[in-house]
Each structure stands twice: as C-alpha cells, then as structure tokens.
Length: 241
Image (cartoon, rainbow, N blue to C red; front, side):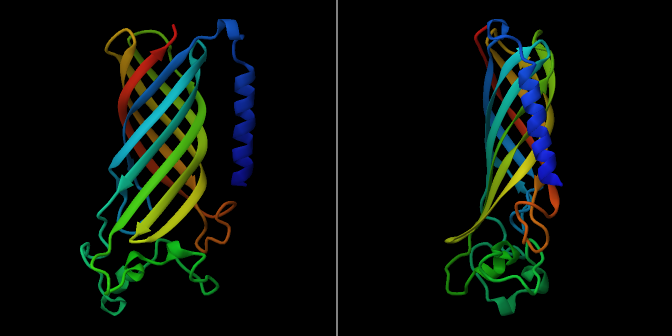
C-alpha cells in the first residue's frame, strides 16, 4: 500500500513538471546551505535527537508561486548512553537491567542473529573486554518535490511536499547497523532577504519514514511508519534573475 502511494506521488511529480513554463520563460532559482537538527530519530535505543547536522538544497522556479525543490541533509550524534548512563566502558550482559536489554524493535522467535541486528540493544553489542563502548547514530536523507510560495518580496514564506529516501545507521565500536527506507517530507519555511542575492532561511519539516515492521521481515515493503522532525537554519543564494 505504501509503495503504491510512493509511485502515485512520483506520477504526480511528473505531472507537475509537465505543467512548467517553456524554457525561455523559466527563471533560475536558488541554492541553500546551513545547519540542521533531527529529532525523534529511533535508530539507536537511547537517543532521539541528532544535534550535529548540515543541510543543502536548491530550487528551480517553474512559475509564479511554484518551484521544484531539492533537499539533502545529514545528522549525527556521538557519545550516546549504552544504558543507564554507561558511556565509557562496557559491562557484562548479566549485569544489565531488563530495560537495558530491550531492542530498538522487538524480536520474534523466527528472527536470526545477524540479519536483524537492530533488534539487539546497544548493551548486547558491547563486551567487558572492551575499554569503552561508543555508540553513534547518523542519518542521511535526500528528497525532491514541489514547493509553493511567492517568488517576489523581501520575505517569502513557502510550503513543500517532498519524497525521497533516508539511510540511518547505528554504529557501536566496529559494528554498523544500517537501514534504508522510503520517506515523505512535508514542511514549511521562510526566506528573509539580507541583500540582493542572499537571504536567511528558517525551515521545519516532518519526515514520515517507512520503517520495517516488528520483525523487519519486510523492511522495504511493509511495516510501521515513524515520524522524525527536522529544523534547519541557513543561507539562500539567488541564481540568475
């Protein structure tokens, strides 16, 4: 069902592009770069905010009030608690509380050790023989879609709806557990001019990520969605004119 929704959105995107002005009448656009913060990320058990991040993007103006936008971003967090505030050293599984042994997603009796590694909590990937147990989380997303808003004036609010993919990873020492999923990203923002060719941008987005179900047996085609929010701040530079 969700894959059909993605295909429908792609078809609508093609329709939007077909309604663009002739090349001679089209305007240029802009590109942007700045900082982003990602919240409610669930790739690691004991973190929900990835505070270190960047964003980049651009837009091509198709007509008055509509552009085609592109957005990429990356977010990162390090020094995540293994469990109960333990960061600098690993402790044995026998010494962990029951809460520390909960996975990011629930495992079933049919799930096997290596294929569904995200089900194993951070504590179970650590070893008492290691001098420390570092947990890191990162997420990279790429999206594209239509953006609507005025193209003139010194203050330009906008809204957009984008589709794309998100790749997340939980890294514990030398173990890396990754997940790549389709996602939608509706959002809104505002550009405020600070000069003829540069503006300051504030933007907020809500990501709907199509994560796997509780067994992760259908990671790419089924399962439960989860929501992330992203805040970004940066500078926008005009192209052409």
